[in-house]
Length: 106
Image (tube, rainbow, N blue to C red):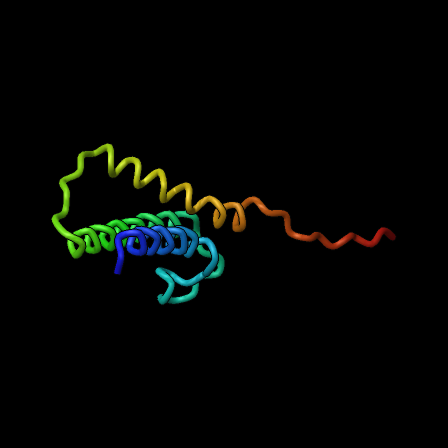
């Protein structure tokens, strides 16, 4: 696997993982269905999936070669990027307008 392909793989996984909590009602994608799932559960899933994505990136970096030590700035930037990736799912879940039925006037 080339370096560019590994980078794009991590970015694609991050984009999908960031939106998963907002597009399904199951806990951690495979758990029991919650109708409707609370925002707290979605944020917890977002945090866990962000950590798993970061772990995947570190694993691929270790496979490529030596893993570099990172300071807090890297993790802050990675977290902000993950939150940016989650924005479409958040908008779809909480900010889109649902069609309303017109109330028949009597």
